[in-house]
Image (cartoon, rainbow, N blue to C red):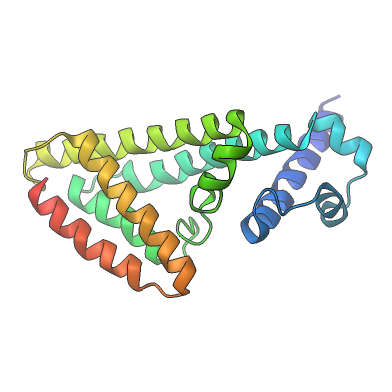
Length: 198
C-alpha cells in the first residue's frame, strides 16, 4: 500500500515538475495537454486520475510552487542575520541566475500573473494568496530590522514590503523583455535607498 502510494505521489510530482518547465517556457495557455502528456510520458487517463482538468492541474502547480517558495524563503530569512542583511540576501537571489531559487528567471508570478488573472479565478486566488504571504513575510523582516537596529524605524512595513516586491516584479518583467539584468541591478540600488528610508 505504501509503495503504491509512493509511486502515485512520484508520478503526480513528475507531471507537475514537467508541467512547470513547459509553463515557464510557454505560459499556461501555450502549454497543450498533449504536449504535457508526451513530455511527462504519462497516459491521458493517468493525468485525469491526478487532475480533473487542465485548470485543476494549474491550481496544483501553483499550490506546489507557493509551498516550495515558502520553504526557500524560510532558508533565506530564518537565520541569525540582521533584518537588513536578510532582505538584501533575498533580493540578491533574484539577480543570481545560478541560484537554487532562481527567483527572477523561474518566477511563476512573473510568468503567469497577467495571463491567469483573466483565465482562472481559482488560479488567480492561489497566486494572489501566495504573493500576500510573501509580502507579509518581507514586512516581518522589515520589522525585525527595525528591532535589531539594521533598518530605520518609520513607515508602514507592509506598504514598504509591497512597494519593494512590486519594484522587483516589474524589474523582473523588464529583464525578461530586454534579456538583460540591468533592470534587476537598478532595482537593487533602489531597494537599498528604500531600506535606508524605511
